[in-house]
Image 1 (tube, rainbow, N blue to C red):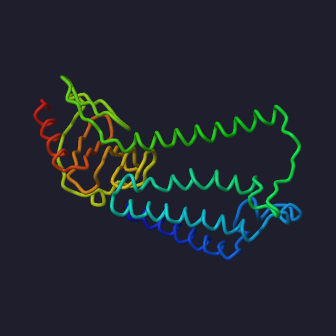
Image 2: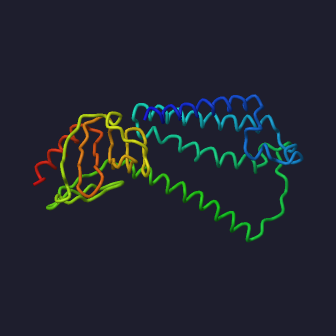
Length: 252
């Protein structure tokens, strides 16, 4: 995942530059919501303090993406997910800055007309949808990094977890243990799946299904008569070798 690490690193640098610029009270054109705000409303804000606050938020985001880049480069799965904190922290903080009196001149929030019941319901629905979306995303990502579990059945193999599958022995053409890394295997372009650090899940354009928690090898390869090849690995190479031996012993 070196390419992803480079992309995360580049984003971190851009966010850091933007954050430092805003710390000096500049760069408002780069801030969504502020650059389109009505000039009269904008005049009610303490612009320097407002931009400095968002400068700190951008620096926090830069740090999270830098951590994500390190996680991607060194295959540290949990660290690769740190950029999610940028969304959790910065969006509510920015909403607070725009709508509270904290950064208004005189520290007083303008009195707005009371919200109607319909508007309150609409706002509650929006907040609930954002919260639910973030929870679903978090659960999905945590579920995706759980190592696969391979169960030997009487007539086949059951692989549980994200992108799990059950394979009948009659459908297996061959089972092999390859020492190649994922770079040497060449996964191709992911069409449906997930990747973070060493974790690789999903389908690829070259016609392969990866259920891997290590991209350094060894890797179990299962070729099927009626489907794409499946690649399985665990973070501990000894576990990968043990599971391979168990499958080989059970395979008729």
